[in-house]
Length: 459
Image 1: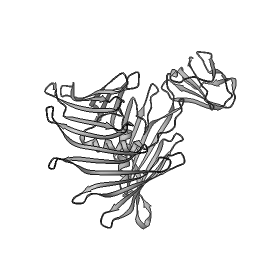
Image 2: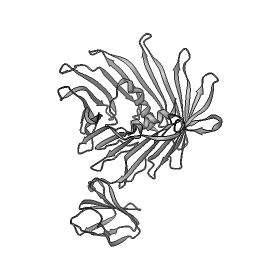
Image 3: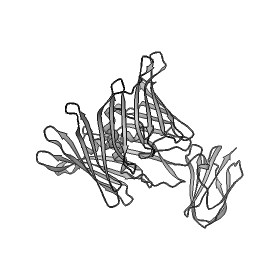
Image 4: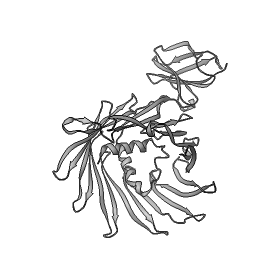
């Protein structure tokens, strides 16, 4: 197991637009899907209050070259949001648009552009992909989503552009759930000859423990009729609420049994953070044999600070350090940088071809509908409305407390923020530098008070 490339793949998956947590994948991606579940299961999301949020707006990826002995930029991802939506490496990214820029020969070139739409509950309705074709963006893929009253995805349909310039259906996926609301089954249907096929060509079944923990995933292939045959499956075990193992198996058609392909075991520290991962891989004659392990280190806030990749030499039956990843985080616990290094033996840690440096950039934002924030502990008045160059703020808290005053535009972007220590006051804010338009003002006290209002600037 190469922790360096595994982390890179995980970062790439996390940064892609998250359609839904239950989005189906093809059989070749089943193992990656399980690895993603394993990785995110033990990653603590940042602790956000009900009044402040931070969302990913860009990332930059740098690769190391032994020729130049330096990192050079490989690509950049940019995210734009509206309606108070957000996302990061843990929470689903609900961006309106996603743009990727590559840097071949250090020259920036647009690679792809995604555009998404959402319903009133922030469920993704459409996902449109465009690619740069000789300097012209052309449509590549379109997907539509349907949800039930509980905001669970029940169907998605993929379309591809036809030669005639119309959208041609290609694949439809249906989703069903058990009585506890867990995803139970996904069925894939193909489209050919102007008709949807009557039987699924692929099925993924999920079963859970009594505590609603994912126990196994089984992928079956359809045969053009009602009969399906097993292909692959993922098995999970748990202890004390933590996942302790994952096993990936394939179906042996010759002997009619499940065959282990890969396995991972997990250990945790007393705080419940994943401390060590040991991986095994199937080898001829031997069967499952140790492949390597990852050792994880955290800071006092449980943010991941380092992953040490250790390989196993099957000949000498010994472990040796191979690579490591170093993580940095912001005050919300969101990852801001991941850099990889390669073990250089007696020369210590070095950079080699394939090492990378990821940078992640965020912005604070607020819900654009202030009704999403439950007011408590005081009263707020702002005037005049509309305002011009100055806004008067009258705040009276039920309990004396310091507070943060924030102004956000209707895209959710924070345009003004300041700390105040007074309990109740009348004051004026200089808004002469803000453009005309509508804004939200939010006051969050350090003892639980929360007040908000909306105002406009007219000139």
